Length: 281
Image (cartoon, rainbow, N blue to C red; front, side, top):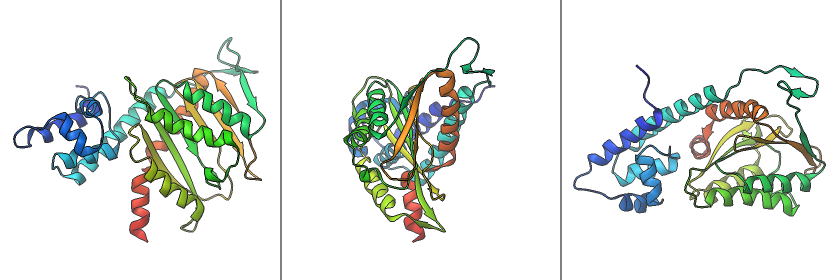
């Protein structure tokens, strides 16, 4: 007997909670109290969409449920969904010949020699996304300290895309590395992270996780657009220095998507990361 779909199982728990509410409560009422739209409530309760924790907590509070119980159920369902996605996306390793990925398929990259070229191209790709954007931010300086308009436009494009109303599901997931050593986090990055969390709290299609980043160097950053385009950024030295490349290839994408999802699964939601940080202070 096959295991139930975790999204459907979680939606069942929410519907059961709703059934226990005395009288009747409409989707509109739940949405108003949870701070989201009626179509979002319908999609969540009918298992067409797995909600963020913020939406889940809002629904549970609207239904006078046990928030901590549902936090546990949500984490378990999220873990099962991510593990299932990772199993589906992890490819068999193809043979890689000289300059080729798979038989007869040349791997073509587009190179960006500076900050502006990279971010302009990434913003264009983000605006053309149809379903999902996965991105990382692991740098020693907050994005507010980059002076090029292209960089600012890229970060704004990601959030605007997540905010846009759409008939189909769309999702932005960002992994944030917070520099720090011996438990001391970089104050400028942490300040930006807290403000970023507050500013994105109402963006229902946006989620972020966080981790401590201990090396005194930038990480390899990526942006994965839908299921085909990979942007890789290389930075370091002067804070404005950045270059990279993009590859439009589904097989190439699967390697980075599998890595991203593995890392995402191991990390805490940004809200939980900050709660734990404040609790230990």
